[in-house]
Amino acid sequence: MDTDTLLQHEAVSQSADPLSNQFGSLNDLAHELASLQDLANRGSWRSILDKVARARSHSLLNTPHDHLTYLAYNVLALAKLRRFKDALTELDSVDDFDSHHYRYETYPKIYPTRCGSMVPFSLRWLHALIPIKLGNRQEGLDRFYILLDFVRGKLKEKQDYDVSIKMWKKREVFVMNGIISEHLKNKEFGVCLDLIKDLVSRGNLDPVLLSKLGHIQMQIGDLEGAKGSFDKVEKLLKERNAGGDDELLSEVEFRNQVNRNKALVYLVGKDYVSAVREYEECIERDPMDVVAINNKALCLMYLRDLSDSIKVLENSLERVPTVALNETLVVNLCSMYELAYVNHSDIKRTLSNWIARVAPDDFDSSSTRI
Image (tube, rainbow, N blue to C red; front, side):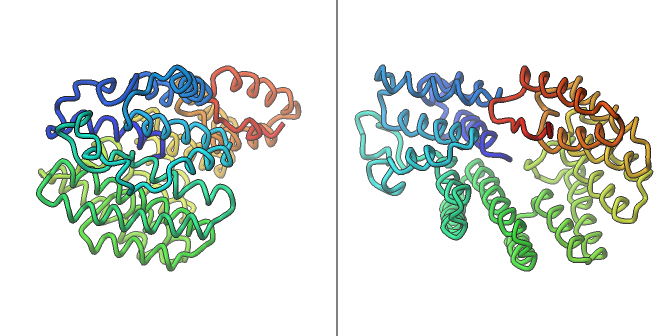
């Protein structure tokens, strides 16, 4: 779950929570929230900045939580556009997330039936992420670990509320993924293994994290350990099909995770034909599985079928441009153009012009390597 998806998850979880059923739509949660969320889904980050600036200048934000919600979208938009210093300036306008100023019960006339913090969880997440983006890795990591403790504290508080427990477990996995990703960048594999095993020991059997455990085990050469982790993911899928209660992934996402894990084992063993077969199952089940699309193309390239490899990526861009259009896929496609065609500069320029028309605002245009 990336940060903008987290914003959507927050909004949906609040409107779906039976404890908060006075909210019938996203717009009941905050001023024109549905419009903000639609812009985020489309990657229209500059439009979000304009909308926030307009709402602020015209005094359209009438409640404390409206201001915090718009602040969260504004910081996210700035981060997406790589304006991290501006994002930090926005974050600095909030002194202390735990201040009484940001609690519903401080304003009983506005929120007569609500209590607790009104700070969006995504804002706490961005508070940890932005220092890392500005090169202050240790400060960012410290904040992530503080956020993890905060989430686990909430899990203890919410033990009697099933809806809240599920939401906070998802947030625990989300924060853990952020921490692990940062440690992986520095090849701190031991720390990553300990973090995931600790989470599993707490009973949080997230299939994505277990799969990540397998990936890390592969990187340190523990192939048998990786297979064991992948087997656990497949076992979770079977338990779910037998009536288990796991809503962290949809049925299709779960099955595709299992197939991608199998494909990775084949890939490491250089059995590219079998890996392609697993990725094709994923794509047949979900034509928007970008990881499967990208990896199938790479396997075909390893099999020296460069023409079909290029077709796989081009077809995905034609079929679902807004989903398939990510920097990694485009970098790989442009690398294949360079291998396959003498006039690759012209082809990449054509691709770059097309991307400029359909890409979200935060797309890195340098990935076309022109």
